[in-house]
Length: 126
Image (cartoon, rainbow, N blue to C red; front, top):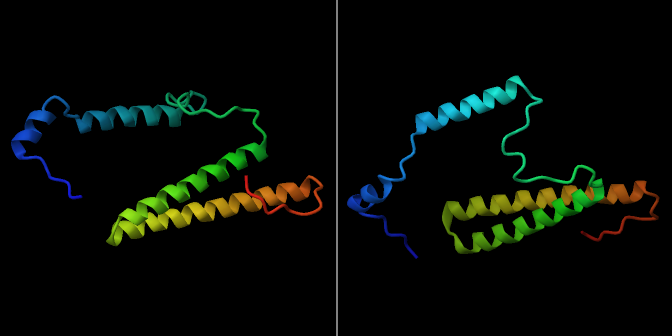
C-alpha cells in the first residue's frame, strides 16, 4: 500500500502547533549530556524508565536477553517478508544480527551450565 503524502497546505496547518525548535532541543540535550559526563555520580534522568533488578542472577539475565533476541529475530523476519529491495536487505541484516546475538548468549549459557558442574551442555534455549 502506497502512502499518500499530505498536500503542503495540510502539512502547514497540522505542523504549526507541533513545531520543534531543533537548535533549542540540541542545546538542552548538550547541557544534560555534558552535565552527566562532568559528574558520573549524578543519576541519569531517564534511568528510571527501564530498570533491571540489581541482584538478578546472570543466568536469568542471559535467558531474558536470549528471549528478547529471539523475538527481535521473528519480528525482523516478518518485516522483511513485507518489504522489497534495499529496505528488505536492511531488515534481513537486522535479523542476522539478532540471530548472532542469540547464538552468543546461548554459548555463554552453555558455558555457565558447564562451570556449574553439569555433565554436559543441554543445547536447550531459554
